[in-house]
Length: 293
View (cartoon, rainbow, N blue to C red):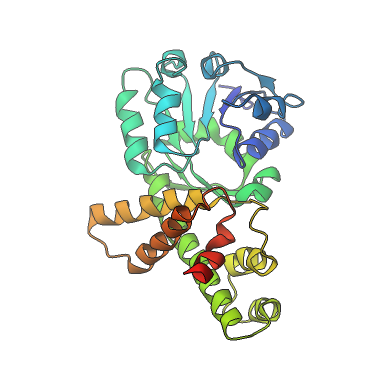
């Protein structure tokens, strides 16, 4: 493989689209696909647009998948109408950048055993803004040679892309720990702002002052700012993502017998938000969930 591999990019959602654009901006040839025509058309100025996922994957050195759920990953790989497994070869490197949990990645490895063993697990953290600037954290699991083959892709997308383990699935385990912290921090920020409001404090001042002290965190600064502005329809990260991800956290914890009481409480808050119909609103809506009771 050359130092500028051809890349098939599948999944042009809120983070996938700016990632694909950043990759093309770094000079890598990108062929992109998404189920939604508008998402495909929005990348037409920087990427070759494929009509199907199979067309995108055909002949690519690296096939990167950036979808939302384990079920979507399964559909991309093995869907009856457009599954890409038949387009992969022993030389193709499958780069799974979705947060889908270790079981989904290990299942993909098992099902593709007769097709390709070159699978790199590389979930991301950082959000859409950092995706657009190629400034993500990518947690990479995979064999040394396979990671080396996708390193030009990782370098174009990430400020930091450490190898966290030799097996596909290790990146997912790292991301689960990341999401535990993020999910709990968002919930804590919502609880703090809701309490400040209920006590009659100026929540804007609370946010401004406490971000200068020991209570500061990225999530309190970022999501707390959206909570103060009540900017719940300016969706940077939809609530439904943390409904899914906190489920992955608690499932992984149960598998190894580890108690995660804070994550479990946060999961209940996100689920309550979902029950109230907030799935597609920004995850900072947890402040309102706490206000609504």
